[in-house]
Length: 161
Image (cartoon, rainbow, N blue to C red; front, top):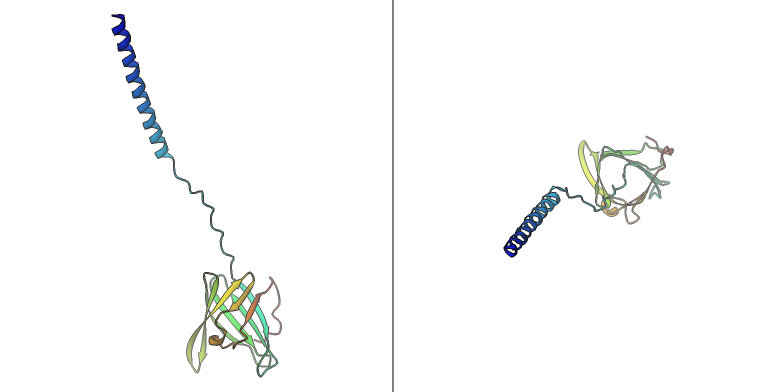
């Protein structure tokens, strides 16, 4: 009789262990399901803003030279001023700009005989320098244009407006 009683007790202990073990694994599953997944990949660093004033001095074909000033505003509006250094006021065109990968796309509007004409220029951005990607199409010949970002507060003397 003692053997039957011991065997019954052992069987009950085994059943209890299985129930407890099964309950624990369900609790662990529930706990692991309740844990919110956390993305551990590093956040992408924001691209540096291209907004600012860029300047270049270039040789002129039939003038003493050209002084170019490009202003890219934080609201994505833009203004490009070209002074041919011939005593005439600088030619100013306004438009918009947008980042396009590692490039700055600039769209300017100009009045040609009473009709607004739009032109787009693409600049490669490298640190604080913008280099025109399509100089011939944009009317800057083979020489192209390389604009350097001006330090905050830098003067734009020499530009007649």
